[in-house]
Amino acid sequence: MIKKYIEYYRDNPEELWFKRKLFGWGWVPVRWQGWFTLAVYLVVMTPSLIKIDTYSNTNDEGIIMPATIFIIATTALIYACYKKGEKPKWQWGLPKKK
View 1 (cartoon, one colour):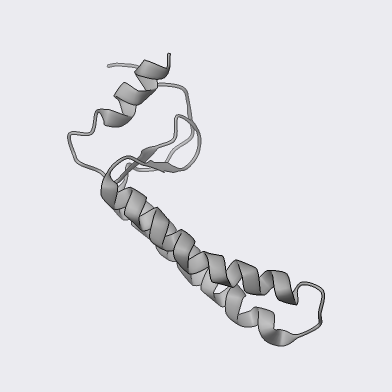
View 2 (cartoon, rainbow, N blue to C red; view 1 turned 90 degrees about the vertical axis):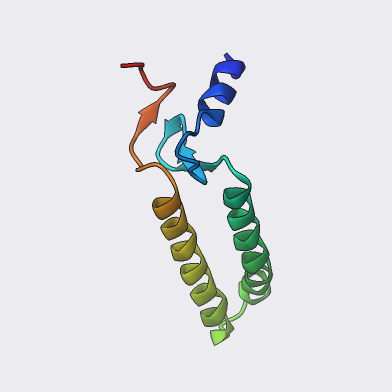
């Protein structure tokens, strides 16, 4: 069964960076460009998440900048997935062959 999933993700004649998840809605990186995009997102988000954790018990307005970075970075990631990946849709398992 796992071999079928790997085969599905490797079957990428359009050279998309992201393919649809097999279960649910969303994308999975399948080329190095997709993995690089995800890595950049995580590098950008890590300091912001650490800052949010330090401000979580205070009434400081310092949470505005990390929250803004989170919104911008997440929006950019979703945009990249949409532009360089398959069109999203709900999927439950391998697609049926036509």
